[in-house]
Image 1 (cartoon, one colour):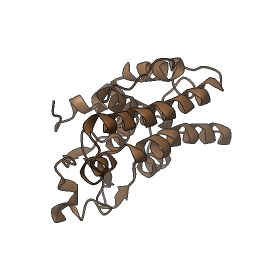
Image 2 (cartoon, helix red, strand yellow; image 1 turned 120 degrees about the vertical axis):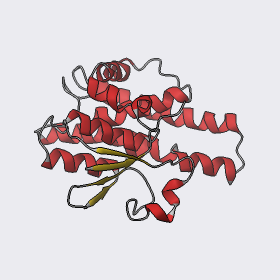
Image 3 (cartoon, helix red, strand yellow; image 1 turned 90 degrees about the vertical axis):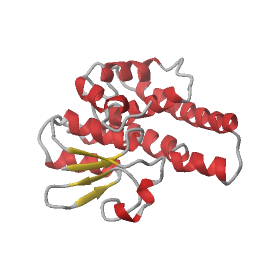
Image 4 (cartoon, one colour; image 1 turned 60 degrees about the horizontal axis):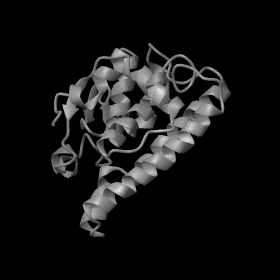
Length: 213
């Protein structure tokens, strides 16, 4: 398989974690989003939506959207199960995942931040304040959901799930923007448990071949 991705893309980071957790080898293909490479015609065949990540299967089939890619891998590939076997567990893990993927990430990704700066002429610090506000608001909701169930090592129980694949990249991005993580004990405990695992360490941005300072 080939993963077309960018080292700082949190959506790409999610898929790298999932591939590592399931023990699946893949070819890392970097696409520099900050330089606009994803918009170039040369990548149109591999990035049909003009976004990363995109996963090319061995038969050439292309999968897009990180959540769909991870669920496909979980349904078709051996290794760690990223969604629980029970329907209520799956609903909880999907809800936690979507707090990040549907509530926090869409209004804070790179193209939104660039639009704030270039089109709406928002200055750097107000842009960063915007980012920190929405990440903090989303993570407070995430913490409440975690607190509503018995504690486990990870977001749901004692093994990483799709929710952890989503949480860890969001924390990494939040660290870059100096988000306040205080008062989120369950959330940060899950993050620390994840980062103790090799699958998460190998997926982090600094471990990627296209990593930059």
